[in-house]
Image (cartoon, rainbow, N blue to C red):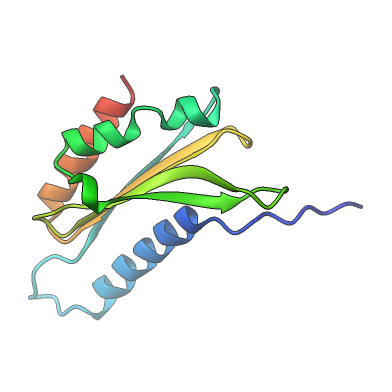
Length: 135
């Protein structure tokens, strides 16, 4: 029986951490307090190259209000030990909203996650990103 170690992926770790924090905060918040953090996430099939998958993502992030200086490239080490870009993360300049976008062409999947404190603003950014990226 052969096993393959899956490399750590910062994007998945960040999405998981955001989801856990949102869930934990909702348990700790009193019932009369304002709504807690929201998380919107979706996955998709990647049938293109890694470069093609990521090609317009940075522009889409900017179109929904992210500033260039707040967008960070996410990478992982491939089997040869080289850094390979697999996504972007961004923080909104005026809202408490974070975005993670990941493409994994090798495994044929991708994901987008948007978290924030204001549910309406968070959903608006998520909807815009999904609509623009899926075009």
